[in-house]
Image (cartoon, rainbow, N blue to C red):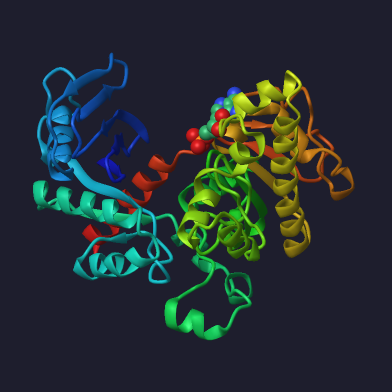
Length: 402
Ligand code: AMP
């Protein structure tokens, strides 16, 4: 079966087509500036040059129309007819408490996603628009929703309930949800495969360190805690996000700077993290280069980031009574040799020993711990699209066979 994976933002749309028998990527692309002047689609049939087309696209339905044209194109396409696409998998950010796994999209599912707009006002509306556009243009193709929050739904209440008046949970569903779930699930499963063990017998700490960053504790195959919270602002320090801060800072800045609470939260989302501390960049490469050249605030930002990841690893080691494996993934986790070393430094008493020679690797699956490290440290490139496609194919096959 071929599966189309769609990830819709407010003015952009990423897509991939995968052949599920071989898990092979056939084509991928990006539509940018949807609904804005200068709309453009960049399509790539794997093994061929990129194909770029500037064409007006007033909405997501136009964008999906051009994606389908590209997939059917005689030169750059990968299918002869749309019937060859067995299913569409949609990345959706927030499914609230409703779904603990991926689901076939029905009217009830769409209603549930609409209800979650309150919880993810920036992300769920474009995700929903993408689904509706596909439903309009591919009315007979089954669609599956794969949710960033789903993998974390196994957390016990003591991990997800905040110690604020319980009625806020009852009235407004304020709780920890967690994000990056598809990535945490993918690398946790891959780690079990790499170790040749059943995931149900493992204690895994997954560290998704990119521009957005989160850690998760995965015990016996299910997530028991994660660092992002009610929103993706909580937890680790990120490219431009502060991560966890004392909430009283919000009203303090509000009064001192004479701005409203939304403006403070916007600062915490967009002007904080590595960018805020370093004053140089949100990009780890820029910050590390400047640190090497003697910029002290950049050096400080790096230490703060590494220290925060270390704290979460420590917390999850305590919660799970140790770990079998720590996995690093995403842009920083996969490529930043120094950061992995810094995070894992001085944890030998906890059974974590990184091997500087083995750790000298980027972007490929590798064991980076020493042979005698009690906790194995792995680098596993994430592949959220493959995870979405796998879930999608599995659900559609199940429905067909019922
Ligand atoms: P992501 O959000 O997963 O795409 O990750 C983006 C982040 O990965 C950016 O902050 C990049 O600076 C970082 N990154 C990518 N390559 C490297 C590298 N070679 N060394 C350090 N950071 C990197």
